[in-house]
Length: 367
Image (cartoon, rainbow, N blue to C red; front, side):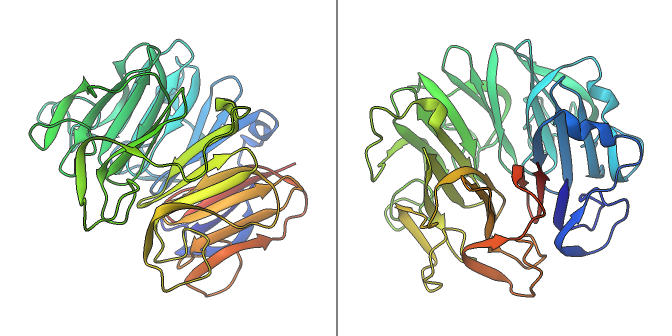
């Protein structure tokens, strides 16, 4: 297991903290190395990282200032098992910044960490932060989190949102913050959800894409001068109609702080902010694009990971490529270049299997 990028709080799991590690290094395990044999997913948040095993066990490292890890220490520099989740089997976890949400095998959404903006669906005056995992919703398929808001996809195909709504990211017209989960009206049959910093995307089962919230950099597929933000879902034009043979399992939708990536089969499409090359466009004079365009990789894509302002992918030939913001070495090329504008190969000793990207750090499991 390799990690690189920002490490101010030990979020790389290297057994120590330092400002940054600019090229991939092996993660150091004290006693939990056996998890690599059963690792099914890696989730990288703001200043913390999580490993999920196939039995639903979760390990974490990094910053714990508001209970993100549920431990007694302010920081964990090596991966430790999250004792607050022992009674749960976790199948999915989301942590965009300092609030964590997870879905259990029996369909509950649980949450812990910061609740300063009500992103746990509870009034901050009641709970501002928590090291305990709280049950928030039931009948849940997926959860996605932004900087200060959260979205749950229910088994009936509808959405509920909570937290900060100042930019319309909750999908409802009401006061700027909502302290309990409420439905997004006039939106159903949802299959996939993703959150950016202050916006939300949703793909329906009939392959229509909707977005709401901040549109400062064209995240909603519209020119910012025409629409700065939307409190209600707007349909986003998919440039290339999705082929009939493409099933939902072949589609991946992910968001960074202000950019979006859509994987359709073995191709990638991107839109939104491009100040650090997030869109994989060689033209570094293009600050953003509200038009979805293909990321030219030169090879077929197997999987993609989207960080705050950088991205990782694995090609079908087993090559790791990275691009975007690189100030703290989050792209892992070892250089001092602050931004990489096109997907560039990173050498690994063996084929990459699982990748994940966070605010300024990255992980990759090798075969």
